[in-house]
Length: 344
Image (cartoon, rainbow, N blue to C red):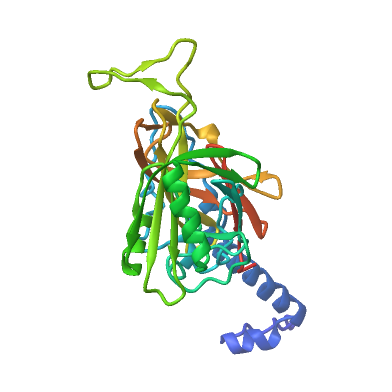
């Protein structure tokens, strides 16, 4: 009896593919493609992309985290808030800027368009009874007055009368300054007055053609007065008075979107113009976007920051998870900064 013929085995891959069921081939191709895609996603998550960049580092006492941690994050020199790609120009600013000045009976309002270092000595387009503020000058407030000579006379009269200067902020806070002196200056020398770090106010005036300039300086009047003391560190408080809390001022030097686009690096400094040491704790720092709080990834120096009295300064870097929203508010020790991300 003849045996039934067995199907011939495929001798080559081409013969096998020719004999295979098309639907089976399609399933094999789809399965292999899905497996490859899964491997790519897992590798991306593992080696620095996606969710791996959001790994939170807890800020616990005794567990300091440097800005140059395992993610390789470090401040890049030369970046300032007004020159950062992806952050709207001018969108990083104090939410409580100065709004008005009162000098020897004259009330001057602060123009809405602020100055920067480049426009400081440019010809100003100001209305009557207006001054221009040098943006982010919050330790030594710097203002430029219109070129009309009447404003120079206001400054000279205030010096002779030893008047006070009162600064009112947009939120209604008031600060008083006692006039130190007024001085005739050259226009070229005006820029040097913006680099002072003492709590003060500086008013700059120059005529229209830039051939004449005048500077008035005022010293901040603290909320209490201390008695004279004979020895270093021996200042005494007047009866029935208590020392105020540390007067901390935050200056932002840089806001940088990291290369992965998922983290934000902030650089700045905290200055203490008070008479007591100040502290900035983890609870004093927050980045909020659409009411969602971003995780702090790393901070240097370790929190809490101890800021010495008498104009002591602590420079810092901090890395946050980037908010999902296009706008966010950065708060550092009760000072708010508005951020707008233009790449979204």
